[in-house]
Every structure is written in C-alpha cells, then in structure tokens.
Length: 402
Image (tube, rainbow, N blue to C red; front, side, top):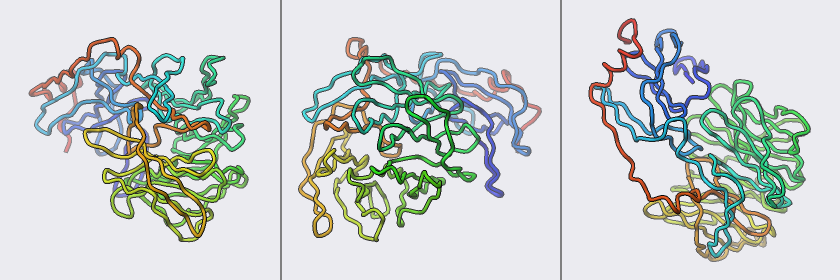
C-alpha cells in the first residue's frame, strides 16, 4: 500500500507481495515466493511504472503471520539478505496439540504455512489460516482426522478466523473489497461471505472473540501503532467502543464462557499485562498477570474457572501460565502456576497463534517432522556491495527520484 501522510489517501500498489521497500533510486522492491522483485515507482504520482522484474532469487521468507522477507538495503546501496529456497517459504510448520504436561501430538496434516488456529466451541474442528505468500485463506479441519482439510474462503486475503457460539459461522478479516474489514461466512461452506464491518482508510479490523450468546463480537481496530477494542452486534452491524481499552499491540481479547467477563492484553498500564473487565464494561479492571517478561494471548478454560496465557522469557522462550479465577466480590485471582510449552509461539506483537480446546489441550504450531531428522542448517547471509548499480541495470529508471 501507499498512503499520503498529508491527505491520508491510501491505495494498493501490489497484490500478493510482501515487505515492500521504497529505494531512493526510484524503485519499489518487495518479496514474493522466495524472490525479490523490483518495479519503477513514481514518487510524485504515487504510481508504479511498468511491470515488476525479479532482481534477487532465493531469499528466506519470515513467519507467515508477518509475511516479511529477510533482507535490508542501506541508503548507500548495500544489500544484505538471508538465503532461502526459491518458490518455497521457509516457515512451513505442523499443526499440533499439546497437553499440560508438554506432550505434543501432531495432527495428520502436511506441513504448511499455518497461522492463527481457533478451535470450534464443540471441540470438533479447527479453523486455521494458510498464507503461502501468494494466497491467504481460512481452512477447516476435523480434529478426528476423518476428512481432509477444506478451504473455506475464496477471493482476497483472508485471515484471523473466529467461531460463532454455535459453531455455525466464522468471522474473519478480509481485504476482498479493498479495506481490511470483517466478514462472516457459514462454516460448512454453504454460503458466501457477507460484510460485517468496513474499515476506514488506514484502519484494520480484526475479529477477536464471539460472545457465548452470539449477540456480540469483540474486534480490534488498528491505526498505525494504536489498537482499540470494539464490540459489534452482528444482528444490526452496530459497533460501540469497549470501554477505553487501548494498546500498542494486539489485545487478543476473549469472552469468558459465561459471557460476563473479557480478558485482554494491554500496554496501557505499563509493560504488557493481561486485564479482565466486566461485560458490558463498568470501568472496573482487574490485573491477572504480573510476568516480568510480559503476558499475552489470554485464554479461558471451558468452565471459566481458570485463565491461561503465554508469558515472556529469555532467549525467545515462552512459557504457559495458568491461574484460578472466581467472580465473587469483584474478580478474585489465585496464584499462577507455570506449565511447560512445546509449541512455537509468535508474539506478542501479532494476533493469537494458539488456542485452547474445550478439553484443556493447547493447539498451535511446531517445527515440521522433517526438522527432527534433517541436520540443522545455519542461516547464510549474503552481502552485495554497490547493489544499486545492479538494480538500475536490471530495472532502468528515467532518472533519480527526489
């Protein structure tokens, strides 16, 4: 996308590309399927000139949640990138279940670029995003393994699935009509997607949790680094702010099983903390996490008597924490316990990358089975000096951009 800071005008430049960078020579460089592509860019008209051409092949792709490419370019024309496989993303993972003891069971699925798994309220299915760098869609899988995984969404880039209370519908974010609004669709694929929200220019909407009675959907609205929480009524498509909740990172808000409480992550109280508020909000707030490394991805147990979350740790290690809670004389929080974590957790600056089944089992992503037998390969960094001259030779421009 390109957006004018002065007027706020925003328009799409490339569909399917990732991690675009404007370079002072008048080029837009971005990643696609393990390659860097370049196209001339008119800085005055904010338009592409001509078509893109591949300029570097074999660049490592980042996690599917962000879609970024592992490269950087200095103002003096030095390119550095991490080598990867052309035409393939390096972030294929396995979907897996993990119990509270840390035992992991991989689902009977091929390794793919899975993201944001969410389990249906009845515990029988999982909705998960698959983003291969070219397409991004929501897929449905029966946890029994009785049937193959099934694609639900078509058209645009679709992500962040959230189940309805009766497991009949899924709400998700989609850019199919230009903005990053929220749509919903029957989970069995029997109907087409319908719009629930329209995001303003420069704003992105993300569904986060559906109330147990189906009357409300919590969703976040992100504008730059600012995230605020809203409550939407699917029946009349009216939305109201959820109190004054705000954060500089995704809130990943979630309703309690009885619909009376909302747990969410916020940075507004210093650091990264998990708070709980009544629903509808009354102004009361209760802190449930005090992890030194920060806490995120709050999740309720099926009976509502426990809150679980992911805590920070040194060297990228993330642990699970659990605490007993009770709604008496306010909101009473017990002492947290630490649980082993064998799932790969990306965060906290992204949307939820794991979920909890009604049976209390975590679902998330782990390194693919092949990674357990293949020897680890150290990342190879490539440095190219004077790369601007090579870029101009491959994708000529009419002159230097100001």
